[in-house]
Amino acid sequence: MDEGEKKIRQEDCNEDSLGAGILTVTNKRVAFDKTRGRIMDFSKKFDETVINTRHNDVIKVWKEGWLMKKVCIRIKDGDGYKDYKFGVFSNGSWLETLQEAIEEFKN
Image (cartoon, rainbow, N blue to C red; front, top):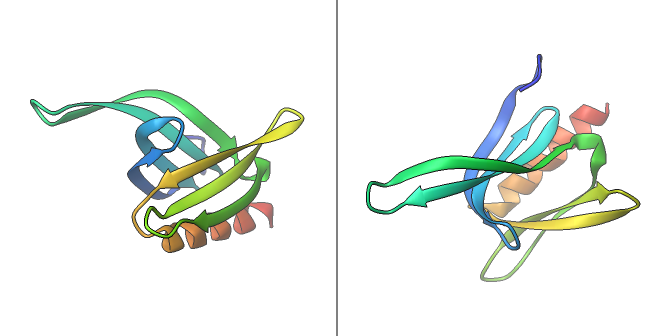
């Protein structure tokens, strides 16, 4: 983490296209680290960081779903954008956390 960066929220979750990992929101960025786990000894290891974006590159955050609820983010990707959908516990609370972190960063 950068100097002055503080972790706001973190959760073990699943992203629709990337699979299992850990979603982290800090006061400066959103990150998603892939994980590998072994059932035999219940170990979990961090793999690669596949999303690591500053809050000013987040275009939109929203939640969706009826049974499988997700918190979603749209991130600038070159000339276009990329959507990510995370299956987190309490997606409404995650949406608030993301919105507040992004708003505070931009101010």
